[in-house]
Length: 496
Image (cartoon, rainbow, N blue to C red; front, side, top):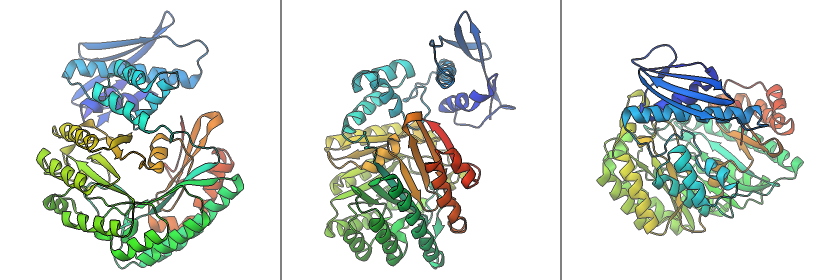
């Protein structure tokens, strides 16, 4: 436990996040074996943020721009406070985190912020190195992603994305934190799909009222292909009928043990252009350890079936720093992926999430010293094989404080992934756990409305889900909270 004493309660979480970059531990305002302090004051027109621990101390001074609004001043103060704490911790530990002082999910946002001032991706990356202490390797990675996203990053104002959640799996992976149901006898699935179809009708009505057309549809989970093929077929038939103009449809068919010729044939006949066949690793020992329920050979079998059925865009996921795996294991999985030659590969750094079995078991792999080498090897091997990084995001409690990167062969990038990670498109979400994210460009505001995560609760509150979405979108967000009272954490407002 680490104690943080700050005179600015509104900055506690931000400064605590900076501490966790160096010390992956709980941060408390009341107690802890290691103590840090943050103070801020104004002096001669400047604002000074101070971070200290014992005799060690760092200061960052900044000048509030003339005419800056409240939100701009808050952002600048937050950055200065985090920078002061980062520099203090770097002095104390001697560590050089690859992402510097950045703790957010989307570091590309800062790159685009700099590019908005007229900088090239390369010069914007240099600014991140200078101002946020990002390593040259990571800054270069961001610049490559910005280049890959050209032509995708601007979303026409009459387009939106659709997310459809199918929260069912055959087994639960050790690292998974999603609220998904085991299928068991399948009794809940039919009632869930009935409710989902009603919500999709509501989404289609909203889209028609606003004159919007579908840009990209994404069916995620859970594992959508784990449910009976007939039930998934009902959902896809409704979705493709209600939203006929989608430029891209993806089904996250990730678990190889959920794929067979029947459900792959059904997906192909419904015009699904992108699917996932996700090994995570090719080590059978690791797969058993993490509860995947399939083998490396099953991955190759499912991939061959997908190709037989004509799928021209297949994604495969790998996870670096899985329990019990070293660099040799990860290198073997990389070699198998490159031999398969999927159109895109997502390389995740293992994240120990709060609701996962790994968290319950107090797994310490997030501190894996080999994780950085695995990530670097993935970038080198995949780019050498013709792939290029095209999106990136970060999570807390991630192995090596690293990142998740999507790689794709040129022209095979996933629209939905770019839109979702860069938050450049409006997203309507249907199904348990789906989060509608609506952009209000004039106010530079994003508002979110989450459906209940539990499948049974979702079914019972279906009318609230539909009406809450209407209130969010037609009422500018604020009416949404009145139209359907949200459960804790269900609605969130943000700036972009």
